Length: 435
Picture 1: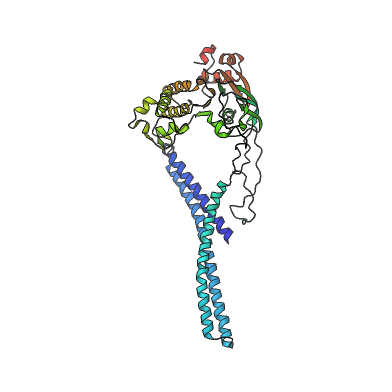
Picture 2 (picture 1 turned 90 degrees about the vertical axis):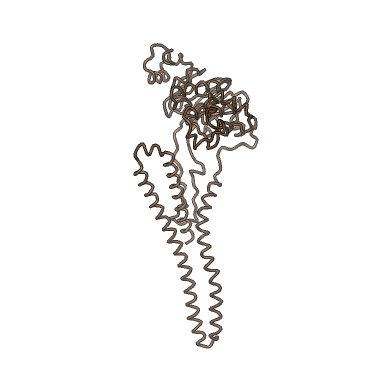
C-alpha cells in the first residue's frame, strides 16, 4: 500500500500548491477582480479548488486508516491464532497454561513496537511525497552553463554580431520531460511517460546583424516577429540552435555567464522592483557602490527629485513590486539601477510604451543619458521612441527584412513605412512621420 499512500500524498501537496498559486494570483489582481465585479466567480473557483482538495485529502486519510486497520487486523488475528492453537496444545499437554500466558504476554509486548512502526511508516510515506517534490527541483540540471575553460572577463567594447542565428523554443529540459518511474503504481501521479514534445517552428531564421560598439540599433516589427527573442539570446537566457552570437569577436558561449551578463543592462516595459527600500533596489546591480554614485545615478535617471520628496528619501520602503510608486517612477528607478551597473551593452525592451506623455518625456531623457557611449538594442512598438537610433532594423516572421535610417526606410516603402503609416497615418514628408 505504500506506493498508493505516496501517490495520494503527492496529489494533496501538488493541488495545495495550485491553490496557493491561484490565491496569490487573485490577491495580486485584486483591483482587476473588483473592477470586473468577479468576486463571486473567483470565490466559486476557490471553493471548487477546495472541494477537489477535500477529495484528495479524504483519499489520503482513507488509505492511512486502511493501513492502520490492516496492521491492527494482523495483530489481533495473530493473537487469536496464538490463543486458539496455544490453548489446543495446552489441552493436549504439550505445555502448561502458564507457558501459554507468558507467551501471550511476550507477544503483546512485541506488538507495541509493531504498532509504532506502522504509524511511523505512514508518516514516512506522507513525508516522502513532499521530500520527493523538493528533490525533483534539486535534480533539474540547467542547460545553459559555463564551459570548463570559459573566459571570465567582462567585454570592454560591446560590439555585437548575430551570425546566421536561428532559434526555436524547443523545450527538452528536465522541467518538461519527466522520466518514467517504473516502480510506481499505474494510478500514481509520479508515473509519467515521456511522450516527447512536438517540434516547434523557428522563431528566428538566418538572422545576420552587426551592431558596432556604441551604436544605437532599434528593432521594430509586428507583434510576434521575434524582436524580444532576438534580444533575449544576447544575455544567454536561451541558447541558439544554429549560428552564433559574438561580443567583441568572441562567441558568447565562451564567456562565463557572470562575465557576459555583467556587461549587459536591461530595462523592460514592466520594471520589477523588489520589496525593500529604494536604496536597495538601485544598488541591486552594484551593491558596494558608494553614496555619491547612487545619487548620481538617480539624478541621471530623473529620479532624485521625487525620491528626496518622499518622507524617508532613499530609505523609503516599497510595497510588493513597487506598488506605492507610479509607473514612470518605477521605470526611472529601473533606469537608475542600470546606470549604476554601468553596462557596455544595453537592452531596452519597450521601456516607454506603458507611460503617459509626461512620464515618457522624463524617462526618455534618462534613457538618452543611459545610452550615451553604450551599445544599445532598442525594442519598440511606438516608433516615436526610435527616431534617435543610429539604425533601424525591421523584423518580420523571424527574419530581418530591411535596415537603415528612418528617412531611408520610409523611401523604400517597405515594412517600416507600413508601420509608420499604421501609427501616424500617411505622412506628407519623412519629418512628419518621426514627430
